[in-house]
Length: 507
Image (cartoon, rainbow, N blue to C red):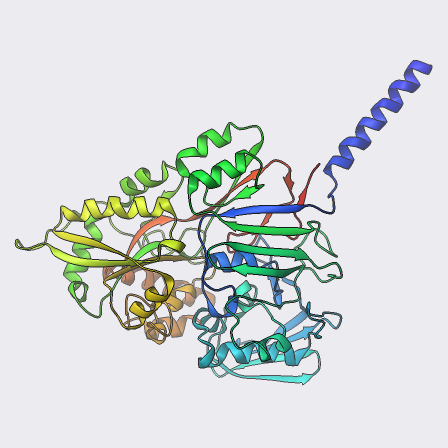
């Protein structure tokens, strides 16, 4: 009997230990190494993906969006939308404060949105997410009403993103330059941000208003998060395998299989929705003002082989202007693999200039671009690389001094097409790097149309973008997070970024 009792106690202790190991542990610092940098940390004035990753921990949103795409309460407990999507009423929580102790109320929300809408703020991406707002009213201290003259259906999805996260109005009013700082109501406080180095975040111990999709409420489990900018893939990888950091993004493609065999490491992957990695061809000047030249360039590129060279089979080549994870993606609106590459007329090769910022471009992308440079040479194109810093990049795109730029945008809502193809967002006002103006009417109609009509309009737009060769699709980005198996509780945001609010470190 004593033996049975002892065995029973032992089993009970083992079960308790196992259960304890699965329970979140409070404390610890998560060190994350990033392969690309951001020149600006204020999410309201940049579209950089890295900014969204970092500041999601610092700023809260009016609404959350769960992994299954449903919208959940956050700073707004509830909301009403009228039948034609021209009025949105948000009822705010009454217990929220920013980390500088300013109260979050209707006036704070209105100040943030008015600031984004003000042309002086240069909030091109955040402003595009808000759409054509007519007015913002505050009937009482905790109610915000957003009015439109014409229907605008995508607002909730835009509001759920960090780019429309709410910042302290006290901080904003007293800080002429917000490029390096952010003060929000989120679970972490930005202790420091240094361009080219990284960011340090510390836990806010009085946080009590997490998003409705979170797995817990109250303060975050982690005491701190340090984001370190390590552009060299070998250095980033070594930092993970040696335990200097517990997570890295941009897992080096050549090392994915080796990491998968490492018992101390896991790789988490989330395919991006939105605009894939594409080349934007400047239609307003130079060689690419001719649709035939654009089409020749488009069909001279073989994304499948270039992506295989650069990413070792870890990413899928793209053949359209939206990724498959995006609402209303049309699988039939794609580059025809059967269409042969067009040849330019005999003569001197056409020189085209590819402008990019190395600090925001991962090494695998540079390898990809070099493979494309070799491919298009056969079709008569002399592709020249112009690597510049972020300031010169902004100046040259604003002055229309380029032929090609490249990026990707992560958003589950097809309204992202308006951000990159509506004439209102031609640089310096936004990200319409192709200088397209032929899609304005369709893009404007789509934001307020019924679902069935929206789907058809976005299919038409996708087809037109490819037919006119406004862009060259390259690959479907996927966020790859290499993590120590001590890291638990990671979840994914709908913009394919890891959420760290529920994350914790096991002992």
